[in-house]
Structure formats: structure tokens, C-alpha cells
Length: 347
Image (cartoon, rainbow, N blue to C red; front, side):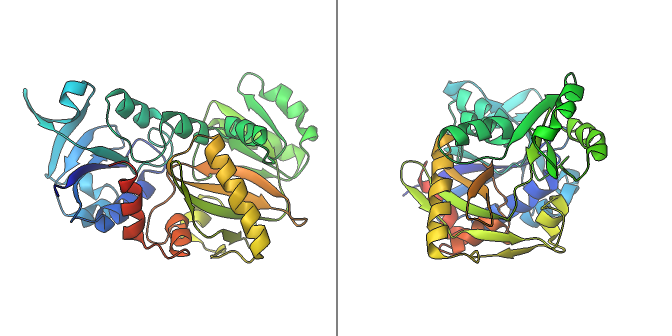
């Protein structure tokens, strides 16, 4: 049986660039090379695309992969007659055909539907969520609208932009304190502030608008956060539910990737009936947002047992210590098996 060729995208023009490098390194090291020919393609912070031909370990050393001479400029061929990539060598080019592209990109310009739309336009198979689900999953406001319409509870919220922020702040009492102020479209808790007092609201609003042109004031939900890993297209595979235990504050970028005070409990410290309800809610949200391939659905579990949707990560962290692989290990699926299962859904 001939091998299928998969291009793995990493890096990107995003504040989560360094996280993408770590996730991609794990993916590249764990893909079954007996089944798949793998082409690493890096996107620099300035937006240049290269096929990386060097030692894979350099990808995990932040921008080191960009500084070596083992880079070949590439571009996506948007012509379906030359489907795949074009390697550029001065005025000459060579076709680099692929069977699928696996975007291991986090945050804007990668997880938000931009790359997915370009690849779909070019007729290239995309591993994971497509254009619509990626775009909606990145948009906290619209994701909540769809989840609520599907019957899953969401926090009370109020959106704003630079033009109406004063009016929105005047209505903030409808949300109540404490609240969270967030950019509508940003990953890994960038620009997120927990606001305890009205006098701190202005600063939080301005911080959110540094990362996006829209923001949202959102009710702080009591209880703790739980997550659910979901894989599949028509038939869904669901990992064990995990739980975030916080010593204080909230699960910001530093806690997500350094866990200085936070603890991840996998499986979550909940009874089987509650876990089943969380799984069912996660599957409902996954389908409501038209997700496919894989995604992590994050929710809150309140002291009275209510499940409240928080957000969907359509390309969750994929390092060896990330939550998604950990939840899949909970059902006996190791990293390599998880990747094979995912790739086999498409090619």
C-alpha cells in the first residue's frame, strides 16, 4: 500500500506561535511513518511559508527553525490542476503534491478559518475542523449563540466595540460583578481580565480591544471548568472529562502552559452521571458548531450541577502534556493511535 502524503503546518502569524511549534513537534514525532509521508511546512511570524528540511527537534526551539539554511520557499497552489504546494526556486517552481494538510496552528490566522478556507478553495483536504466551524469556534459571541440555540446554557454576556464601549460599560450592571472581559476572537486567554469592581472595567475593556476589534463582557460562572475531547465526523469518539482546579484567579495563558498553581485532574473528580451529562453537552456543542475531526469543548460545572458552555478549541494543544491527548489516553488511545484515527477519517 502506497503512503499518503500529509503536510503539517506549524508556526503562523499568531500570538500562539510558540505553542504551535510545540504541538507540531509532537505531531511530527508521533505520526505513523509506515502509513504516511510527512512534509513539515512552517509559517514564520512575518507570514512566509517554507518547507522545513532540517532536524525536527529544531522546530521545538522557538524561532530556531527559521534561522537555519534548510528552508525551501513554498506557496499553496490555488489551482486544482496543480493541487498541493509549489516549491519556489527563483523563477522556477516544482509541484509538491499532498493528499491532505494538517494545520497545527493555534489562534488567529490558522485556527480561525482563514487557512482552512484557502485550502478548501484549492481543493485540498483539511484535517480537522473546516472553514465554518473554525471561524465560529474562534468567535466567542457567535459560538454562544449557537450553543444556546442547541439547548446548552451559556453565561450572560454583552458585546462591545471601540465605537460603543461607553454605552456597553454603562449597561455592565446587567452582567454583574465579578465578570470576565475578553476579546471576541483571541486564543489562550490573551486579553482576558477578571473584573471585580466597576472602576476596573475601563482598563479591562481597553485591554480586550488590543487583541480584537470586538470584545465581550461575560458573567463569571461559579464552580470549576471541565473539558471534553471530541473526535469524529459522523460517529463521535469522546475522551474522559478533565477538570481544572485553580488556586486563584483564572486559567490564563501562563497557567495553561506552565500550570504554576493550577492542577489538571484527569479524569475529573465527578460522578459518572455528571460526566455523562458533560459528554452529552460537549457532543451537542460539537455538532451545533459543525465541528469535524477533533475539538476540545470547555464548560463550567456549577455547585448546583448546571453545565454552562465556555468555548470550543478547534485546534487544541497537541503536546505530550496537553489536555486533549490526556483525555484521549483516558479511554486507552495513545498519541500515535489518536493521530492515526484522526488521519484515517480523511485519507
